[in-house]
Every structure is written in C-alpha cells, then in structure tokens.
Length: 309
Image (cartoon, rainbow, N blue to C red; front, side, top):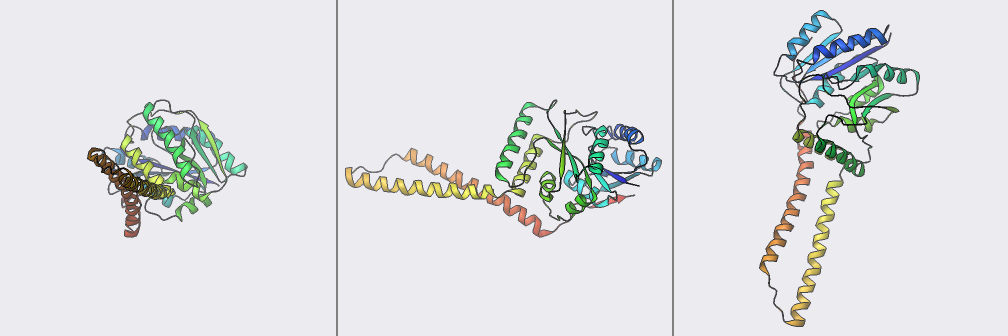
C-alpha cells in the first residue's frame, strides 16, 4: 500500500488548521481509497493556540503527528523538519491556509504514479488578492534570479508539490544551513511536471510574509544560487578605476596645455560621495556572502525540537 506524507508548516494558524484538516480528510476519503496517509504538523514557535489544536487532532486521529519547535525558526526549517520526519513513499508540502488546493493532490499523485515524473509542482498563474506592488517585485525577482543563476526558478512556483521518496532523500542530502527550497528543488533536478492554477486567498487569518521578510528571502535566494553580484561589484570597481585613470590624463593635459588649474570642489565632493557609495555597496555585497559563509561554518542546528509525538 502506498503512503503519502502531508507536511504542514504552522505559525499562528489556530483558525485555519481545523478547516485544513476537514478539507484534507474530505479529499482523502473521496479520492484516495486504499492509500495510507500521515499528517505532520510542524509548529514553528506559534504564539497562539496552534499547538493545542494539533494535539487535540492527534488524540482523535492516529494519522496526525506533530513537531513543535522551541521558538520560531522560519518556514524553511519547518519544511526541513517535516521532510526528515516523513515516512511516506510520496511526500507533499502544503500551507494550512488552504491556498494550496488539496483537490489537486489526486492529479499530482496520478502523474507520478502513472507517468514518468519524479515530482509534480504547482505554480500560480495569477496573483489575485495580493498587493500590486508585491506582485510587481515578485515577478521582477524571478526575472533577475533567472538571469543570474544557472538554476531555473519557475515564476509563481509554490512550495506545494508532491515528491517521490527519491527526490526527498536527495533534498535531505543537501545539509546547508542557509536554505532556499525553491532553488533546492531545481538544483536536485529530476523529472518535474508543473500544474497551473489561479491564486486562492487564505480561508482565515493573515499572511505572515511582510514585504521586508519577502525581500530578505529573495536576497537569500540570490546569494544561495548566484555569484553574479560579486562579479558585478568587481566590474563596477574596474569601471571606476578606468574612468579615474582617463580623468587624471585629461586633467594633466588640460593643465599643461592651457595652464588651467583644477577647480570645482563641489563637483569633486559629489564624485567622492558617489564613488564611496559604490564602494560601500560592493562591500555590502561581499559582506552578504561572507555572512552566509560564517553561518555555515558555525554549524548550528537549523531547528530545535521542543516536543513531538
């Protein structure tokens, strides 16, 4: 009998968990007769009643398991913990807010089971319900990172995907501390089918992803899968060295030919400020990569489990 593990990262999802569980059970009973299921809820340091609700579910349903962190470690850590605890032949990651439609799971399962696919991912073809500025920057990010990286990132890709055990084991072999799962899925390869769907709004609660958190996550993706910013900062440095060399020659020739002293201190101050800004920007880029190396070298645990059943 095949077994499917459903991993649900949770952070302050007390309102959505009962709705998610009821919908998943409806889909399981309707579309997955004869297939074993397990649910792994990963409580990522929630401050509300999330953990207690999951514990109550686990008492009523033996399929429900839970992992509770000692604090909030982030969604990437929660997904990793779920993957490490999973035991299914097939594993899927889903959000508790029902933005990942459970009804799609049967089609995803059939594609892996009956066709030559190792994983089936989902991507949104619209961003209905999102602030326009967030949608604009999200699309811009995917255009930029696909230009910078050798790994293809699919625009609109969700973490919602169904994977075979071989894909999951390959992901778990990547033991890096700074994790960007959308890049890791692409890095390990395998034959992947993409299913498209219209964006679905949350059934309850509020999104935990602020613009600042999304920006930091985007920077994580760029630094994890591209060294182009380092190359770019080097080229900028070379360009300004070349410009400075040309200007020195121009000033020397102008002074010798016309006896014109070099003046214009306001413009000189502006140039100094501009070049200094470029230097600080380049140092910032280098600092980002250095900080990632520093975190990797320390080898701290990606998450700490406080309790689990």
